[in-house]
Length: 81
Image (cartoon, rainbow, N blue to C red; front, top):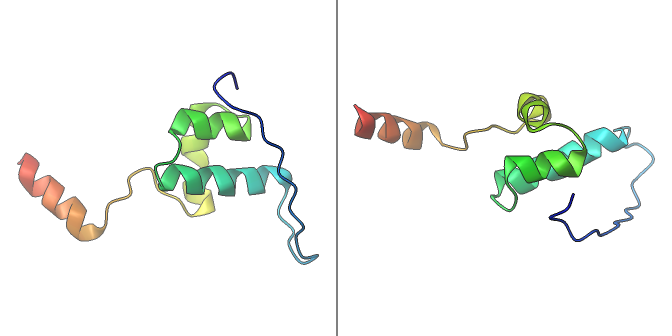
């Protein structure tokens, strides 16, 4: 985490939230990655796992490595071929 300015964030959550600390870190890092605010490597560092494991876990938390809509993906494929 040499590239990070350390910030501690305390959040009060409702009692019905059962996610673990790891889950919450993945959700936050995944969202920041999805928005293009952090790279996959930076997001992995936030969670404390390897980049490979971060990318492997994205789908489990509802995030995707490629953030194309179906139309954008088809257009991309047309431009390549």
